[in-house]
Structures are given as C-alpha cells and as structure tokens.
Image (cartoon, rainbow, N blue to C red; front, side):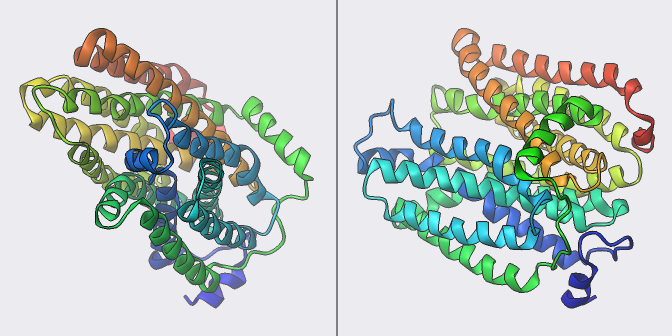
Length: 411
C-alpha cells in the first residue's frame, strides 16, 4: 500500500487497511528520538554545573524544568490531538522542538538554559505521546495492541539509550554538541514525517479547548478501565522508579565502585524488555490482556526477589533488570492497548490522563527509594519494591471481576 493510499483513508474512516510494518517502525523510531530529548540532560549535570556555575544543590533544577515541561505537556498539549489536525499539530511541535534544542545548545545564561530545558520537556513529551495516540488511532482495533507495543518499544529504547548516547557525545565534544546533534536528527525526522505521515480528515471532536480539558477530568472520573489501568500503571512505574532511582547508590560505593558511565550503561540491558512489548501487544489484540497483566505482575514481583540477591553475584543484577523491564513494558503496552478502546475519538486525552498516573508513580517511587535506602540499605529497598509490586498484583486481583462487560474480551 502506498503512502498516498494510506493518506486517503484519513483517521475516521469506517474501514482501515492494516498499517504497513515500515510505517509502524517509523512511528517507533520517531517516538524513540522524541523521548530521548527529555533524558539527555541527566548524565550532563556535572558539565552543566561547571559551565553555568551552579552548585550541586541547584543543578537539579535543570531536571525539574524538563520534567515540569513534560507534566504541562500531558495536561495542555497532548489533548489537542483530539481537537486539531494531528498531522499538522505534530509537525508544528516538531519544528518548535528543533528550535528548542538549538536554543539549549546556544544558552548563555542559567535563565535561558532552564527555559530551553522546559521547552524541550514540553515538546519532547507532546511529540512522544502524540505519536503514540496518532498510531493507535490510524490502526485497526484488531492490530492496535501490536502497533502500540512496537511504538512503546521505540520509547523504551530511546529512553534507555539517551543517557549513554549523551555521555558518549559529550566525551568526544561537549554537552552542547549533544543538543546540536539531536536538533539535526529531529530536523531530519521532520522532513521525513512531512512526506510520510498520513493526512487526517476533520478533527475528531468539535469541543472547544476549555471543554476538551474539562473532559479529561470526566474521563478520569467515569471510565473505570482508565482508573484501574491507571492505578496499576502508577504502582508499576513506582516499582521501576524505586530501582532506577537508587541503583547508583550501592553500585557507586564499596565493594563495587562502578563509574557513572558503567552504571548508566546498565540501562541498556533494559532494552531486552522492549523485545517483549510487541508480543504483549499481540496478546492483548488476541483478547489475553488480563492474562498478560497477571503474568507480567508476577514477573515484576519475582524480579525483586532476584535483585535482592545482587550482593552475592552481579548475575542476579543482570537477570533482575531484564525481568523488571520486561514486566514493566508488558504491563505498560497492555494498559495502553486497553484504554485506547475505551472511547473513540479520545485517544490523545486518554493517553494524557494515563501518563499522569505514570508521573505520580515515578515521582513517589523516586522519593521513597532514596529514603528507604538511607534507612535500611539494599535489602530494605528490595522489600519496598517487592511490596509495591505485590500491591499492584493484589489490586489487579481485586479489581478484575469488576471490569466492564464491554472489555470482557480482554479477560
């Protein structure tokens, strides 16, 4: 099927042809490149601190500005995909992201640096979630899980690779080159998407912007599938955040004394979790969403038991990371496959609402991780992670019988 034929179908036709595999992978690549921008700064904080004379206590504001932009994007920008021409909206955001990345590279003061980081978080997040909602909307319901799974694999690879890529470029040149390279990649992506992205028909909803935002609160209040899947996501992302927020503490101390580069490279092991994303999406398409969730939650709990054995061998750390990220990715893909079926024409608002649970869970996990580790060390941290994972499994068991009949095929 040609691009022109795909474009002619629009976004609201009653009969859609299956998305060609190359286009699904294009969406996945675009998602990975977009989300990476939000995480490039993490391994560059030392260099930023020196260049802008920021103390260790203040350099964290760079990450705060980026995450603040991400949060506002979920609330104010991502929902626009249900109201405006998706293709035009994504391309405008992409061009603005290129300018924001160039602005960060050229920043000469702390104020401009923070403003640039805020815009990178804002536009990078809006692009990532907008692309996922776009792909889910133009996909057939019977293949939606596969499409979401593949695009989420791209997000995971981009997220986990960002730190390593930023560190490698900064070692060769400097931190500014990281953002110049990214701006060039996003410019190239804009030219590709300008030619390839399907052309949608009319906007999916005629609601004015104020009512569009108000409808997100209504979705959160009324849609039980969104509520249940959101709480599972909150607990799952809290468990992931507990590990990734605290792992640097034991590995940088005795007896390991690993470098920051070596610790950051551990994230690449999580790419193996992306391999499970497409398969879990296919299982959701086949009506096994609930079973996939059950198995993944059990694996999530098991991963903490394996990670607890890390002091005995680094092999347990490697196996534990693989299990942790495979379980998290499978749950995440299944969750999104199910919520995209809640209400036609609301995919952007649904993904915005869902990702708010992610933000809360990640934040709570990070806060709890450092405090618990300081109090009880690695063993206490693993018990915390296992407890949160067990709570997610218990919640799924309690909430599952009450799922709406309309979603019975996912049992």
